[in-house]
Image (cartoon, rainbow over the protein chains, first blue to last red):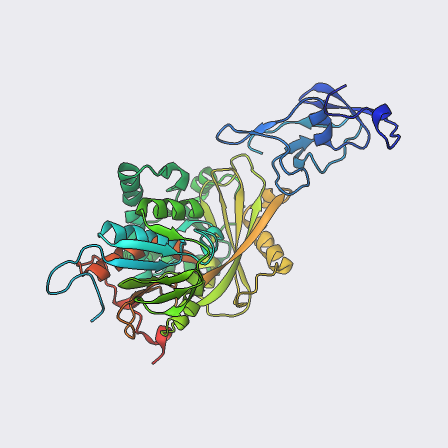
Length: 99
Length: 392
């Protein structure tokens, strides 16, 4: 369990987690239903997944769909904002260069 | 006789100059005048490069201008740009790589036979004025812009066209000037000796009005109104893409829109990528005063026309749009020179959508006029006392 994710049993809302998994560049990553793809990535300990032309790392910046920094490719669709796309079982995520 | 730096006693050192407007034109003027020995203060109602200079594409174009004084100024500016940047790099600690100067060249395409005839006639006339261009056959065009539509009747490559990151260019010019900069300072009225502003009274020998689309209002407050009006333009920004667009590519009907006087909304396709990978889709022109409300219909029209040139962009996400006001003068010529009604007042404005590119030539010309140096360029067409600017 990642330090970034509050386990269901500690969550005062009485949350019951339904696990899911996605692949990120071919690697299987566990998540829970209700997370955004960015949430899954962050909870898996990944804080950046692309680089600007100058080499600076980029991941979640605003988290609300405005900055377009967290772009990823989902099932072949480029430029998806990871913070806005709910995670779903079997999602094939690829990190992308120049985008 | 305008109040210049020269008089019978020879050049006067440290003339105090207030430049109103810290956009790219004000910044370029500040740099030239400081270089000429003036003590320059630049005021801005908000902050440097915060309005018009930050809301365009960074065009440094000759291809969209027909023969005439504006083209002459554009050709001169295009020649000056690399020298100005080299000079800044050599003499100041300012990092000019941030300006993103890209002499990438422009490609102008006509998609109809009528458009092709008009483009050929236009380019032929430009050629006589010093613009270089080359016709691209189908293979050469596919090589230069592999993602461009096949439905092109005629394409010309203009190697002199370039691009800068306009806000970075403005701030680099301003930093290089070494001028004192006062932000959040709005001009209220008065004259050079007693210039009333929202942050206090300032004093100088000369005032340069470089307030872009607000230059008309600034001039009115200073008692010498000029006819500079806002004309709005909008741009869409895609997510960063793999290399897709390699030049500034635009539809030949852009030239018609630039020269138009119509108050109605006009759109024409202008497509180019930035160093960050985003693709800028333009362009629109409308006269709506300073109304900055988003117009989805205008944005949709821009996108539609861009897709006609680059069908491959159909599924690409637009992550931002922005719009800005361009300083529009009814006769489509910049206003550069001394005000005949107020000997302390000079103007450098009215560049409409071309101010980024024209800034360095404008500033050099203004300096030469102020100092009384001979110029390579005839300043007469840009003079303030012409009918379109101050009436009969």
